[in-house]
Length: 330
Ligand code: BMA
Image 1 (spheres, rainbow, N blue to C red):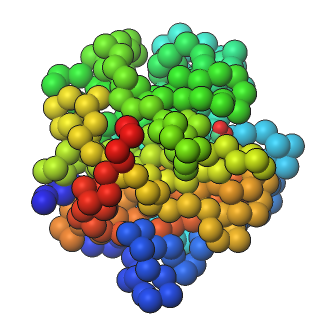
Image 2 (tube, rainbow, N blue to C red; image 1 turned 90 degrees about the vertical axis):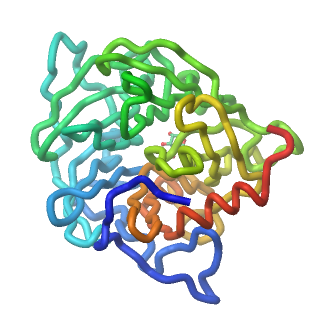
């Protein structure tokens, strides 16, 4: 098994222990970003992190104390301790992008070829997928929204598929969508999107952890076995939604084809900081760092829509987990 990613020797990392086992194990520093890291923040969660210069940079979901959903840039030397820009990102439109900015949430960041692309849930007559690019996390150039509303969880592949950019997304409604499948589409220029393909549906059997809706999480990770996709799955309990993390493998050349999907969740909201907060019972992954040399992976996820957390694993173990626990009902 090969992970097709660059070496990242400074990846944030902790070894598993008998009190902290699993295919993914949590950081003992969780939550790594508290809700009040900024003077005006109510919560900081569902955020995206990438290697940048000698350290790391990211785009963070910050709900402020007026409960407005904003996204902020941030920087870190070690990927664990973060400095967030106190002001939200100001986007400079590339062309005739319709404004004004209404709200933004659940960002993802993807390095493709020569720059970082940001996708996020952008308010435009309801949620759709906003697209922007930056080279320095200081100036952000906004492109056209990718889709008509309503859509969430727009996640770019880190390289072109064939000769086109590719994105996973999740058509939805204007509220706390009680349904949702993952779709795939392609674009020659990151502006015009088409060739829409269905990827995966929820697993409707027995009201399991991914029976209500699913959505792509971090940028897919390229391996010799296929694209490793970590995603969120939602269960509707008698007391509301429960958001857990799962894993699947997608075909390298035709990523709308699912070649593996694990039946059990990878990580579910078990810790107090995942069970208690503004929205209880949420573990929502938006980013992963990968060390191509050792296959170590660090997953960033929002907990209870309140704080930002980190979990660790090995790409190889996650792929073994998918292969040895296949979902029979997908
Ligand atoms: C989704 C999004 C996420 C959030 C989740 C749980 O619809 O709004 O940002 O984490 O619900 O509230």
